[in-house]
Image (cartoon, rainbow, N blue to C red; front, side, top):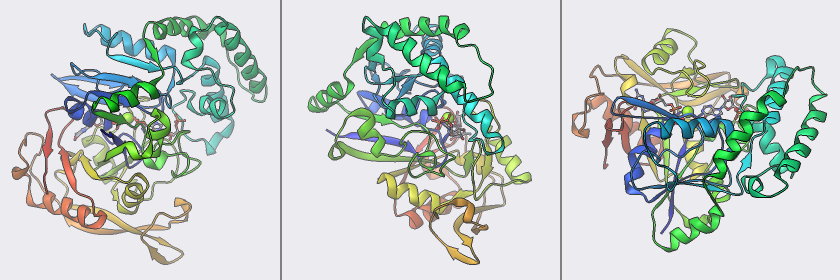
Length: 422
Ligand code: GDP
Ligand code: IMO
Ligand code: MG
């Protein structure tokens, strides 16, 4: 068996959580492979909305095992709160959720360092979610980090103290007031909650699941344009969000990757700072934000909105080896007379159709216009009922990218999904 990978092709928030929840019944195992509580994955059923930050989005299905892989960074406080919410729904997840011993821990001092660093950057700030992601991955690659497996060793407290002292030294570089101790009680309560779960060598478990012919879905966080290597650096996150991240974040060989589901919104959004070529700083942008309810699931910040960017989509498809495209939020485009799609950029007066070294080199996006539609899509459950203009839009994307669009999402609920066999 192979591991199928589901990931975002834009700047995050493509609707990955919803789609994982939709696909989960077809899998035995759902595994998150990178990122941490900077992620906010929303899914809806029975008129209730759930937002997950650390826990894989298969958790609300009956029979699936959910794994937090080694590539993920965990904040015990946020994790404890997520667990509390799920338990309040009378869902017993003690056997359904497994945690990699090699996943790194976000300390209170990582969060403070994140805030101090962003604060010092002033106008050039990344627009981080301030969850401590950057400092935690820095400690991972700097070989200083604390891992989940450390929580069950006898000298865990000493390891914690030693890293905290290092962080205090670093914090002297900043003009930033903080109080770590006030945050520690809750943090250690969170550690106790983590210890109640099965802490595993997830790479061994996942590979043995593969041998047992179990079906595994790897759930990405963030999006390709936030990838540490290929995103709009430095306005990115600190992990590999691309398909390769599923190999290193779960311990599966590249040859074990099967389908790669690329999730993209029918338009584009971005939260935080950084270049965004198709951003609409006008009424159309406002309309997309209002109709799409584009406010961050983690921070509540308004998301910046713009038209679909094909060079970005093609770049992401190339980097990830996407085999199927899933379009989300098609319903949000209802009511626009014309829909614009960026097919290239103007750079130094020349038109290019690829993502340049820096997106800031782009002076202007080049657009193709397609006809919009008025039909409300939210109640459609059969692909045959979609308006011809939407079908044209999808076919245009398929022609440009060479990849089939196999699922169309027409609303936040798990039932609002159309299967498309081109
Ligand atoms: P993720 O981070 O990729 O899981 O996405 P988020 O949960 O951060 O953001 C996606 C938002 O869009 C959430 O509020 C979802 O409930 C919502 N959503 C997902 N798919 C659709 C869709 O097809 N139509 C509409 N209108 N909303 C959707
Ligand atoms: P999901 O999984 C959208 C953005 C932040 C910021 C940059 C760096 O829900 O799609 P970080 O906290 O990692 O230091 O922030 O990346 N960002 C996201 N944007 N969706 C996310 O996750 C994001 N995770 C981080 O806004 O610009
Ligand atoms: Mg999100």
